[in-house]
Image 1: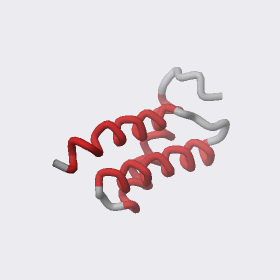
Image 2: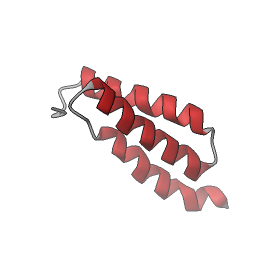
Image 3: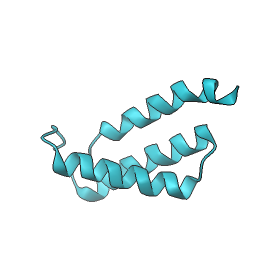
Length: 69
């Protein structure tokens, strides 16, 4: 099944969401890129992946006590 091959790749790409930039713009760019990559691997919508990834990474970096800066 295709999902069993792409699932580990998707997990790796989702892990990149924890990577933060110094500004909200960099955080959105990093998250968006990770979202696009994940969507490509699992066969989802690239636009949706970019939006979700960007939003999730900015939220993570801005709202948690992560060492993002």
